[in-house]
Length: 358
Image (cartoon, rainbow, N blue to C red):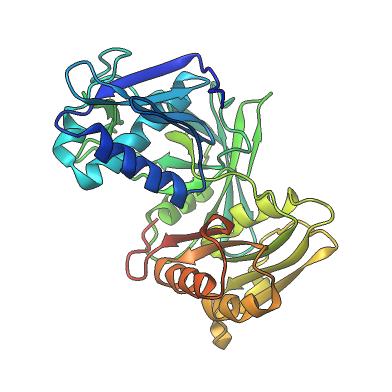
């Protein structure tokens, strides 16, 4: 099997880790994510991901070295971060000791970081605000990854923006200038104008809610923030779907819905406190996809409705869910028990009960 060439590549020794042990860990990860193994030999392992290659090579001063390859510097950086994150969860000292072959970057800005300015703020019904951001280069914000971090400086303090650590991962400074960095969805992107639109759900206790409300009450023009991304999953390429979301995922659900194939079939469940009276502008669905609104104030719950809906769908349907983390876990377990393969599930906990401070 041929291995594609990518212009951006880097390696980093994995001190103290046997090639065989790391190979097995990567293969297990690849299987769980339904990634294609392009090369599996005695000294080489190469796995295809959505954004490039990951794998193993012989190390310079270690038995094994991690390898990443991508089409541009931003995706290469994202893949380095992903590798370091995975290793840090198991062997943190090795993750901190990694040094990539493409040069020392400690203290510089991450390639996926840029400052942007607020150019417009518009209310979308009673519980959403649409914010338009203008940047210098949003070319990497495509349909492959539709999420990003919105970095909000603390009031009255000079912001401490992220920098790169010695191992090439993102380092988030602490202290009075530490930024708030929740994840949001790029509802739409205009590459010609270099603008990005994101929709913010207003809820009690949300730090971004307070930020958005302050924008609404004054002149937002020129307010400086920053973004890091893109990240996360892209569009849902499926003809049979079961989709479900509470307000935190409405922008993502809307973007996925408007890009479904015209002949798609299935349903979309939407939970809001007052159901469809939240007035979020959900785009029209394909003829074969129904939309059902759930009213939380009337006791209707997203996870319950989603689990009940499993019986109406065949296991070749794709399931997409955005909501509370515990509810996401319930649906994932129920879907697997019902026979769904892991690769068909895009079930995400966008927030956690008791910690909803975005």
